[in-house]
Length: 277
Image 1: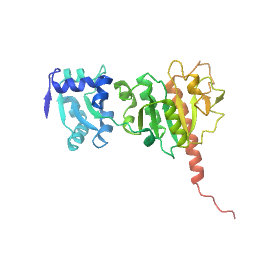
Image 2: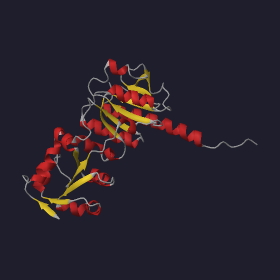
Image 3: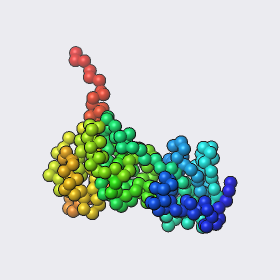
Image 4: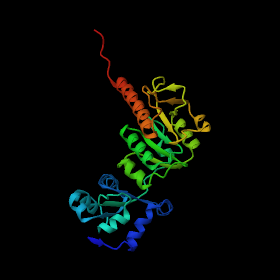
């Protein structure tokens, strides 16, 4: 196994520059940090380009290193100094992979028959965006669309916050909001905008239908021109004294509310009826 101890080596510098969006876009590659993200990246054929691991991580996560080797992925033993140079966390976990972009075209991600989609409009905080992506995955959503004014899903903090979910479900990037809404509607989904100004709450709307949830910016929500794109504007009911919910929490409530009702509706349709008598 080749060892890397010089932070100025060409390979380290090539990986390090992927912390900047311009270089990610140019190389069509990004960094996935930590055992969970690396494991999920390796589960997809031809996504992982190379793996960096410290001696400690080689021992602790021998299965991941073995999986990379079996897949023909070059593995480099990185010194602590090199790993600190490559990672963006205070306490690196000792594993970092260079991965190819995994996003897909909008029409592929949101085809007819989709049941639940998250549309992120002007979402700027990478931690929030990654958490929404992770939540959408957990709720069984079909896709997550990062519209053109939203954060880059390959941002290091976003990748970490997704906890591997970036590799689990179709992700779209750089699509104008209107185009994403149009595709979702053509695929048969109802567009529900999550906004505190909504006149109806989650308790008042039909959540059993195929739905694309439109989520806005953390600070100012959805502007009027985007609210007009929705079929309905819906707010999460506040039963206590809290003024509001943050974006990631509100998205979790909305996505799970839809997922729960959709699953109940699907199961009720699938259950056979017992003949009378």
